[in-house]
Length: 369
Image (cartoon, one colour):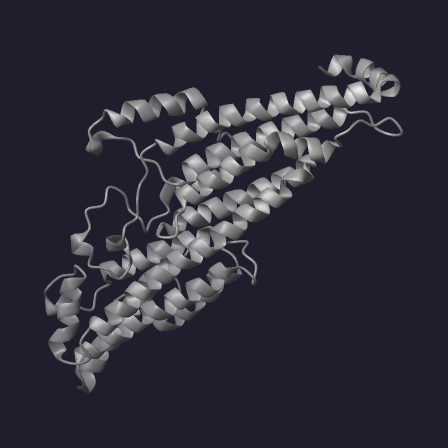
């Protein structure tokens, strides 16, 4: 249509009412076009099988009861969705085919996705189409003394209003109030921030209210998920005995460690899970500001985990031998945490890891006994 832009400008000068009616008709047509296609795309994405983090997969729950098809505490390759330059949205036809095939595939053979995958695909498709449409309207509509109604921003909002509503609906369905996938929610937040910067570089300011609203929805969801992990650790602390030389051993058995007393001071599977989870949060927060809620929530989570270790350490008894075992037990836990989170960068990572180095009696895992 751009080759007819001079003709449309001529029409707008001679017949502004007709030009405005034509743009209103264009707006109604494109509103239907985007709404219908994105509705179909959203339906396909919602049919994709997703990994669900349950209450049994909280940090403080008994690991022996877990039969997860994925590790909810390990970020792993999920972070690639932020850094891969070639990452693209799942094509609509492929999402439909995938959803259809997995519906007839036995559950254990299905390909499951994390929540950030459909979120990324829909949002990327949205901002690419919105950027194209906004750029076209900016080039096509006359400027200066010759103008048509509705104006650019009003026309764009009219075209994309149903699609933006769809985007928010998808976000809410992927992150309901009881969602516990904290790493997935944080990934969605980082994607939202990335897309916001991308829109700024493209000079598409009209989508700023949408990205702000998405972030406003996701931050409370993340805080609730992290609080659920903290609460599970607090319940674990309350369930542990406060004395008896065998209590630490019993607690270790509950958390999946060896039953020999010689191994009872070794790093715990709980420490490994907690360290991996913190490493994931820190990897996604290397550029986090002091005002982000993730900092306060992670500090609370850290305090609750350290309370678990302190309660377990009491089980090694009194006397010089008990003190040596307590010190060895705590040193090994904190040294493992330092090692697991060693790749974390940024102020928050240094602050968290610095306190663990003190507990480990050294740097970068050298305190392991």
